[in-house]
Image (cartoon, rainbow, N blue to C red; front, top):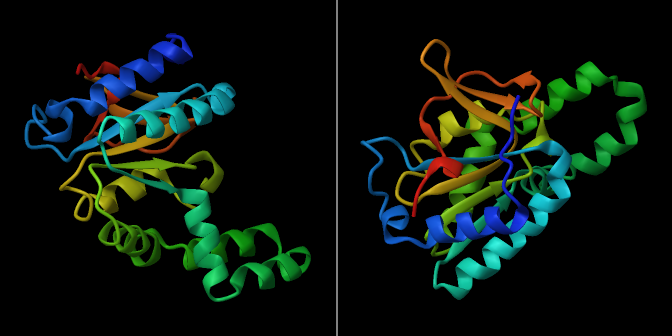
Length: 201
């Protein structure tokens, strides 16, 4: 597995230049595909990427680009707290067991029934030019990236969406596109997103 080798500064400059461009914001050159972009990164550089993401948001706002940021872990936590499920599971976790806990979490945080409507609600509440998703690694295996993107297609198609992905997003003629979480876990094929590292401004 290979990761992008550019410096943090170069990566930030690249992301700012690409996302601030009219071509990106007007979703040009996508060939009728959904405006989804993946920013894969080495999971060992998660702290660096978090700083880059914060600087990216700051610079985009300075450039007049309105953004909507959704951290999937925070979103899940908010949904669990909404009906006091979180405190109940914290109390009962020792006696529930891991398999039952995962099953319950996947039911409560069902992507199609709960996660996508929650994202859609936040999208309606704010004007934005780009949706930025993070926290992908923290919500695995409750939420799988390919499942989220597949279900998000009908909701987030009017503005670009950028997902920070701790792993690799590769393409080959034989296997198609593939999300490899942490560079090791195959998260199923998803071919409708673009690797933003390969995108020009």
